[in-house]
Amino acid sequence: MIDFHFKSDFVLENKPKYSDWITRVVDSEDYSVGQIDYIFCTDDYLLQLNKEYLNHDTLTDIITFDYTDGSVISGDVFISTERVEENAKKFKEDFLDELRRIMSHGVLHLTGYKDKTVAEKELMRKKEDEKIKMFHVEP
Image (cartoon, rainbow, N blue to C red; front, top):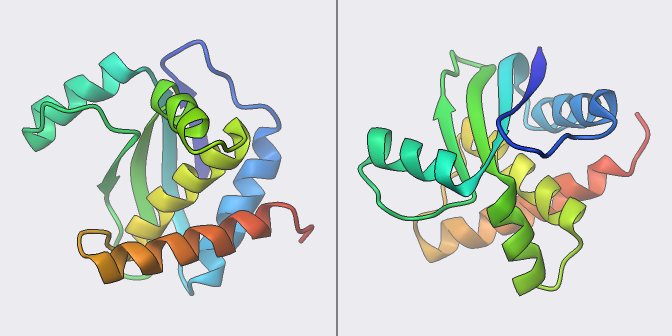
């Protein structure tokens, strides 16, 4: 099950479409959906989590807590919509496209993709692009 929670003024429109998309993203990586919670929040909220759980005193757009068991994907995906908006402006992207990139990024982490090295970052970006394209495809 995929659930969406809001700790800011942001509200995701058309939640069923996003839920279907994330399910197809997970399926495309040969995993199945367990419990995935997306929590949309502010910079301050995510900064506090970053400090408390990761000992990082920096702003970020996403933090993913992985509870995956075998091939069943589960986790909490915290997304700062303020950071997504800033990044969209910075990279001259549409806000919703940037949001989908970050949403897919979290799921890709849950399926085992990393982004620490240059090669891992390149693969992650390629996978994000692939998954974003799936959003516009009807099942």
